[in-house]
Length: 157
Ligand SMILES: [Zn+2]
Image (spheres, rainbow, N blue to C red):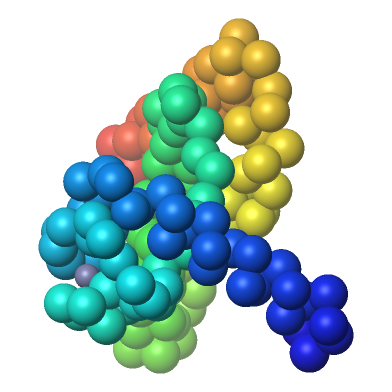
């Protein structure tokens, strides 16, 4: 942002920030220092650079977190499951049971799905709450079903 307009915007933003905190008790988001009568766009206590921002009054992350949680957990578990799978393969020369391989692949795919959801979170959060709720319910239903099938296969084998 070296264009004259960019510099102009930065000066304007700083002026707005300083004007906003002039007569208000606003706390530094990092250290909690009171920024009233600030003279530079930087916290005098922790030296963090400050910016004026717009945020939503009622930001609802609940269904988003509920949707990504099983995927993140499965992805991490799939990573850890890979260690004994490789160990078993090296130690015995044979491959692990097919359902363990399928489970591990499911975990990786689920983890990738959760990461994609994090990447496209704004599209998710823009959906109506009923759509978000449906995604969360689907994610949990699929994971509970896969876990139930796995437990059944372990006890049957
Ligand atoms: Zn601070």
